[in-house]
Length: 467
Image (cartoon, rainbow, N blue to C red; front, side, top):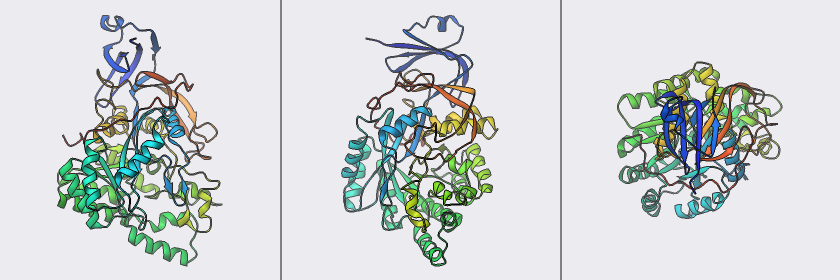
């Protein structure tokens, strides 16, 4: 049985175009587009017609950096694949790429299989995996080749968290050399973790235990230093590099310099660095713990450099680094010692709306919104044009977006499995109305109609942003 849907009368926005067009969906894919009101559009027939007049019709968001069920600091991220992907759908995101974790002493395969088991049958939207490489050795390097062949084409390494995820420069170089050969993309958490640990120890010895000191010890210069070092190691290896959660002016400058030299170096930032700051970390009565993440929030003056980087394409992607921990019982593990606060913020539901607010505020254009939130992450991680655009042949991952709707962000109304919102009380213009995932309506005029198990695993090709 063929199933057809027509979306009529909306403003279709992709990274490259805006046009008033009707969209024909057939069997889960985009079948055709035609300018609204033309004979071609009038000829579209379907069982289901969605009226998008006065609204935007945009590709479903691609959030290329999430951590569902991540073990961290003696606890687990509070969103499961079921709750987290449902919340993503509410926020207009139709694909996530989560991080499978290799434990030290274990194989990549064991880590990847564990994450498949967590996600399979539980996701409301489509998903893929990156692989966190915590233990570089000859077997790991061979496994990297095998994972690339089966569609896990990106590998994350950490210059931070000694004793947990940390890789030294030699391990990083070996992994980069391997990725230069097999087409994989190294994703780097660029902070000098060895130096940070010294500063943490010294701060605690001085009795500086409040959440705000988390930001003070994880210095912007140590993010910039690690970013510079990662770039040079990638250059030696002849490999591309993607730096995750860039938060500081100085780190953006390192990326811009490398790109000016023609190096295949890419960067993402996250909504928390664009909209929040150390003012939040300094909130009294331990409230600042809600905003502890790494890289940390920076003073407000860093935001201008991040917005500029997004406009100049020195930063290409906005992902969430969604890694929620409840304030009660999880963030509170760090009362009296900021270093024990689980690192991470909730945000998978808020990204598309916050970035639309950035359009309203004049930071970016509508097409750039779609580029940094949908098209480029899909291209960067080998899913384009199946994901990230509205074009014939693409998956029918489509969001009907109301640009006039007003909303107030609140934990009372969000769908993430966490007891606070990082954006509590913030007024936003624009809101998701209806969401289709592979042609199936999962949010229908602000009603959830999806189900766990609709989302399927999506193998990826190698980085298309290099071609």
